[in-house]
Image 1 (cartoon, rainbow, N blue to C red):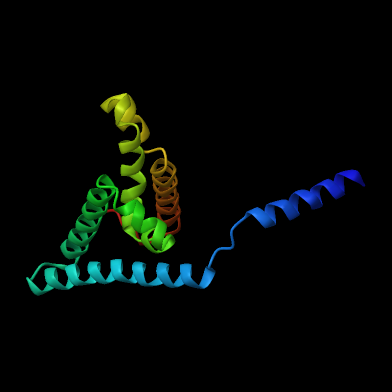
Image 2: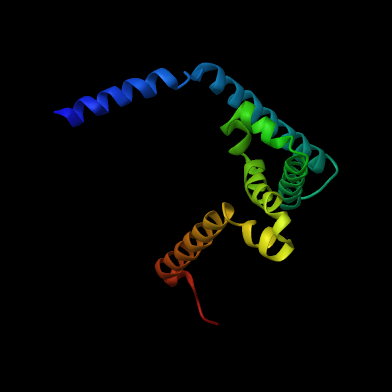
Length: 154
């Protein structure tokens, strides 16, 4: 009984000390910042298509430019401020992936380029890459197995 009472006292203490987060405001900020990032990507895409580039090339250019901008802003410590303001709105688009690679690299650059930057660069993004590549291989094998009738040998 003493243990239950202690847990309740601790929970009351935590509730008093924890700040209430403005959920509606946070959702609104995430929505408009994420929408702004996606709109910038759409503008880049439309410009590429207007210039006569193919669909695949335009998609690649949009990804490269958004990743480059995100990495550059992370290096200037601006993206982290945007992330604090917008939360998932700035981290969910492709810009968040670039930020997750550049941030640890910047944090550990004092340990050297190989062991610091190279070693820590993929601490956050590494599992994403491993599971993404693994899942694509498994899906490819399953696709190959179930579509063997469509493969014809010449």
